[in-house]
Length: 193
Ligand code: ITT
Image (cartoon, rainbow, N blue to C red; front, side, top):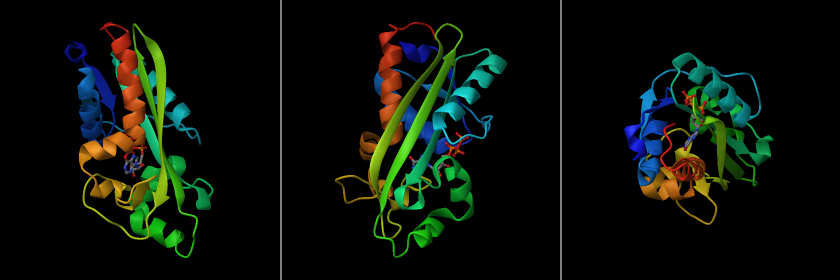
């Protein structure tokens, strides 16, 4: 059972931890929150940011670590806020993003997630997931975090914040990336990370 092995999730965002543990529970994997802001290089690539942070954390902590970097990429804003999603959410928030898009018909957006896992025995491995959808016209729903009240996955009517947690996981960028990680780690046949 992989849950016996401790994997540190380097993040300051407890919502991410809650989602990750819900998604990974089906693989018998449990992450332990290591509540620290990850070391973020200046890059437009979520993958590069996650890889560097995981490498540095594993080196420092000498333990299996997982880092994830995620962001919302809005087509009409040429991919903004993308890698700056955390800062933009803290500053202008969902309301600010809706204002930037007011009067704009093209609401296409993609949530992306890059996961980097680094362990002494398995090295550095990465996994990615995305959720294609659109930015709603108003904020809707109370669940989740971040931009959940304004993101509607493709083919759906509800925002992530209006969905039940497991429903969001099915459509989410984090769900896709972490399921890829979970099946990969399981395929290492319970190898000690
Ligand atoms: P750590 O870096 O400490 O892990 P963070 O919240 O700063 O935490 P990111 O740098 O990856 O994480 O920023 C991602 C931001 O994108 C996050 O703060 C949210 O505003 C937004 N975001 C990411 N995933 C989301 C999701 O599933 N639902 C809503 N917003 C999300």
